[in-house]
Every structure is written in C-alpha cells, then in structure tokens.
Image (cartoon, rainbow over all chains, first blue to last red):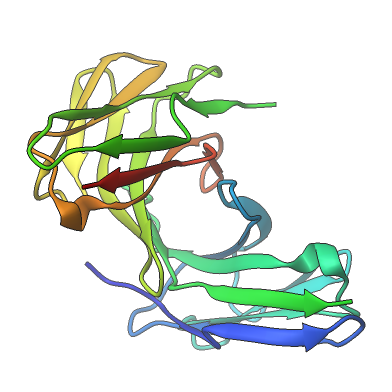
Length: 112
Length: 111
C-alpha cells in the first residue's frame, strides 16, 4: 500500500525554537491531516486541511495544504517541552472508502 | 468525548499462539480500523470494518483476521503469532468524515 514520505525523520531542538516538517505523496489527495502521538498514547488530530493552498492554524501550530495537492507542511512556533512526540501526516483521496494513508512520522524532542 | 478502549496495553505471547486484541468504542460509530505501528514505517492499515460483520482488507492483512459481531467491538486476531508481528497495534473509530479517534495502543511482543 502507499505510504507518504515524511521528513525529517527526527528532530532534536531547544525550547523556543521553531519547527518545520513536511509530507509528500506521489498521488493527489483531497484532504491532509496532521496528528500528534504522545508517548504511550494513540495519535490525536491536530489540524485538518480540505482545500489546495489552505493555511490553517491551531495555537502555535500552522499547517498548509500544498498547491499541487501532493504535499503538506506543519510548522510549530516557539516550541515547548510538551511538544515532544511523534507527528504524523495523513492523506485521504475521498470517495466511498475515505481511508487515511499515514506518513512515516517525525519524532520531535525538545530540550528545556 | 468518544472513547476507544483497547483491552491490553502490553502483551507477551509465544510463537504459534492464537492472539486476540480487543477494541471497544462507545459512540455507535460504524467504521473501525486496526493499524500496526512500526518505527520508520508509520501506521499501516491491517483491516477495517464499515459495519457489523463487514470487513475489508487493508494494506497488510497477511497473518491477521478480524471479527465484528457487535457494532461497538472490533477484534484483531493473530491466527498463529510470529516474531515479525511484534509491534504496536492501534485501533481507531471514525467519528467524522475524516476524524479518527485512536485507542492508546497495545504493545505486543511475540517471543
């Protein structure tokens, strides 16, 4: 099955730094989603994007649906220790099945 | 809030055992999913179900089966556990068009 290419694979940053990660696909998606997984928990939805070019914020998080519909970006500003976790992108084609395809994940570590 | 509950957080099983992973959701959702999570591979879909007694294969169904006898419960079955099935297993219930609610996961070790 298809997987999304997500980069970077891991990031180790200082508290207060900004973070950027991205996700690319060989296929066009109708929806892009970003999830965060805290250690020992399941992923939780952060941001959903439904239109090419769309830019959406959730607090210090901002995500964009790429114009080509084959990529998406997530930025975290002024990182804090509780941002630690694994961030996953996910894409959906739409249609009857509406299955999500997940990226490989970005592990974020924030040093106080 | 929607709750998706996975019965075990940690399991250790022997090679060749039949293993049952249970998942229960409390919001009457029709769609439920089983994923497997491995480092560097993200989440891969094993099986999903659109309704009671209905199931469809995901991307990596080999070595697994599922059961959905009641709407709230979706079980993943490893017919004969093998060491390459050591992984984190995540159950999800779909609570909106694209919104998935995940359980906390079951970390399975096959020895």
